[in-house]
Image 1: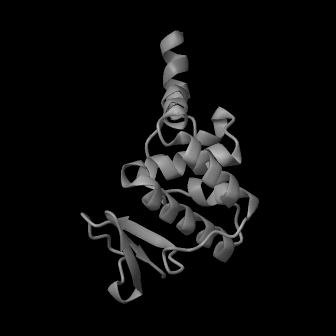
Image 2: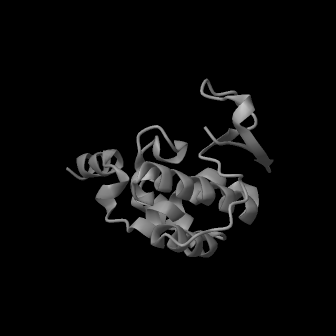
Length: 143
């Protein structure tokens, strides 16, 4: 019985863990850009905020849209999520997520980008003429 519960917990979407909007955004920032330092994390926050504004959706909904942020493509355990939030950059990500969730205007360092990808890949949606900036190992686009 215990194994079944663990398997079910792994398959539940992030929203089932009782995460706050701020935690969902912070985890997205950490999952997508924690290796890019504070500037890279901030740039991904810009993308989330830009999409939320353009699509008239909450930042939480933007983060959890299917296949939009690779961090959420695979199931995560509550322990793994908590570990990220308590990690080295968790406080920064939570503070930045709070600003995004509250709708506070952030200085946009991405040139209005609403998409990005790691420079090591070449996604099919990439339109080079829409590129705005490269920050660390991410290329940003306004599409």
